[in-house]
Image (tube, rainbow, N blue to C red; front, side, top):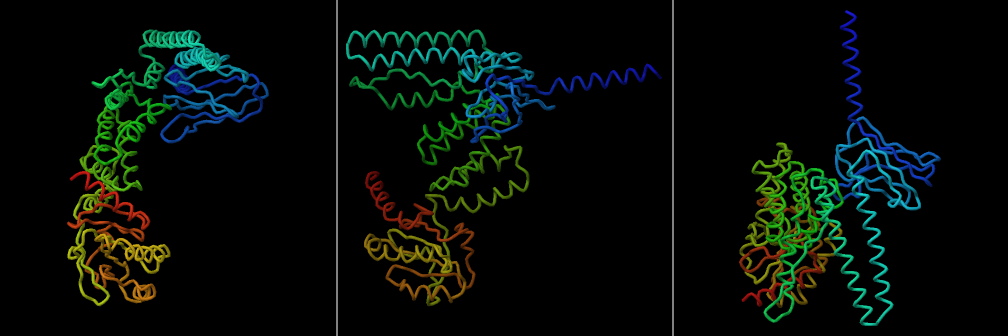
Length: 472
């Protein structure tokens, strides 16, 4: 019996020892720091950092971050008063670091993390070379002598070559290091000097080359990349800055990202969910087409493992409403009646352009915008072939008719209508969740604009006409 008990005790000792071994411990000593609360967190998404721990520095600058669970791997920040220190967290999570407030990076000493040690060695080197580059730049500003300028530029070029050689050697010596992966990811593509037949620089070809190579050093198979200051911002730049901001181009770029992201389920989940939410809630006209594309090609095709039945049902309902309302689609016909009670279906209005506004006489914003639209219509829109289909969301006459009469909203080509007998579910059909809501249709009743403000209508139509003339 005693042997069994001893074995049992030994088992629990080993279990507890192993359990503690898998926790993290980050011991920090910062000379010159006293009695300060500090924080530990990691980079993620739009946030600067996601906090995970807090520690209080004693009078000697000692503090300890430690918990039972292992940290998720990535780039972490130790937030100090007025400054932060970065730390590379991988499977090595028993780390000691010491530095000084007089030179946080230069005096950094690290034990227990080869990744962080490599990272700070790189930083120290780059700070030294950056200071030399700044000195050369200062000298360049102080001289106008051609020979001196040439000599300084040659030194600058030699310094850049030296930095590149150092990077290449670091990569070659540490090919599997996470730090190497991060530094490669941060690099910008080197663009060849493309020339036109005239001898001038081919800026278009240069840009396309830059864009095509921009994502080359990003590892979409490594979940740790999500918790870095490089990965997500670089993807966002690719989509938001290096992509023409029209739905078809954005869809192409987003698809490129998600195809790469399929290499890791958490990275795929992050970008799919982020893009879908971004374009569903976007205030930029036409970007709901991107949401519809993502919903139909990813969520509703069963590719999103995190989406439960309730989420999929809501997404499907949203797609059902939005898809018929995308720019370029034929606007759904609705059967409303005018002030005399005569039916006036939307598709029966003959006009070069038709402004459709859904409004409510009880809505304070509508009370300002509808009369403003009416004045704009009378002063300029009507003469350019525009009609207005002004549809109230009210079912009864009272406030609607009172407002129309008070504001004298009567003019040829201006149609006041309502759904008195509830024959058309136009609130859902036209996604009217607030008022006023404005759509602009062409003569074939295709949607060419939506959710504009009254002040935007004239400029939109002017620009639209210009684009039409250029395309013909």
